[in-house]
Length: 228
Image (cartoon, rainbow, N blue to C red; front, side, top):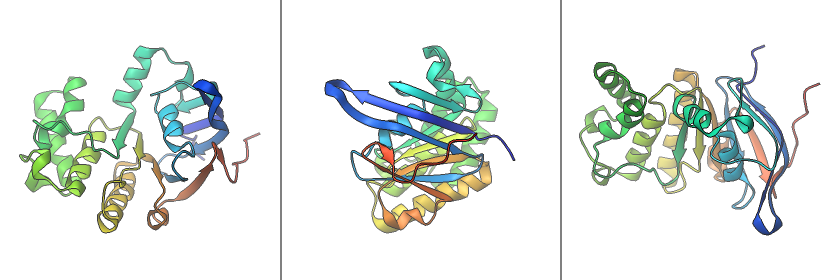
């Protein structure tokens, strides 16, 4: 049995004015597993993903990703984690408007100082993976919402992350396109052997996950057993 890629233990987050976002959340995610985190708006989904990805700090508890204690890392180490280990996909796509699809996908590789020839091959491979090899030279405004999200997924995979974090990645898409994007994420998990955490409140997408964790008022409805 392989070690979990993600291990979260008794995670708590409190915002100003004593607003409690997470109340002792614990779970693990195995390599190559697609986990859907469901819950209504305000249930704590985004807060949880931000803490796992090192975008925020908890009030208490621990997060370990790929053997690294995320909650204890200094800022520079967190930057390296987000660059090399974790890929992010957001609801708003977050593409750079003046860059082509290929250039957007290549941005993380430039930041990692990947050699130009290797970068070009990786960009071509990723655009093919998400079915957009014919749209490499188009800019975001020339693409549909679903196509833009595909570019965002390709960009998230640029530096071969071990963990893909997607926060409501289908929130701006129609139901048919949303299901196609979720199916793509599932295919990526299999082909790239990535662990994926996907926050969604869309019931139609839940069936595509390997496992579902439901948040309500900052806690899982059915808490996972804590390992001995």
